[in-house]
Image (cartoon, rainbow, N blue to C red; front, side, top):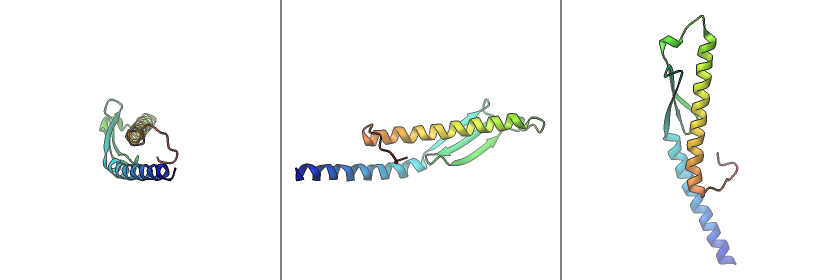
Length: 104
């Protein structure tokens, strides 16, 4: 029984090391997202941080601020979702599909 427990602890430590390495790698991965037919472009990393934001001049209309707000909201939400999906997919490969609460 002690041998099984030692093996289990060893496996847990290896998984923890792999997850730590993957987490650092994911922080450097970047996704390019756009909305409004490319009028709004966002670059986001695996930490859901916005690295870059570009607006096409055509979408900046002072008389239609609501449209710009909607384009930005759509692009940011999509960027965050895709970044989270990227992290979840990468982590599930390390954890063998186990859902471990609190990882990300």
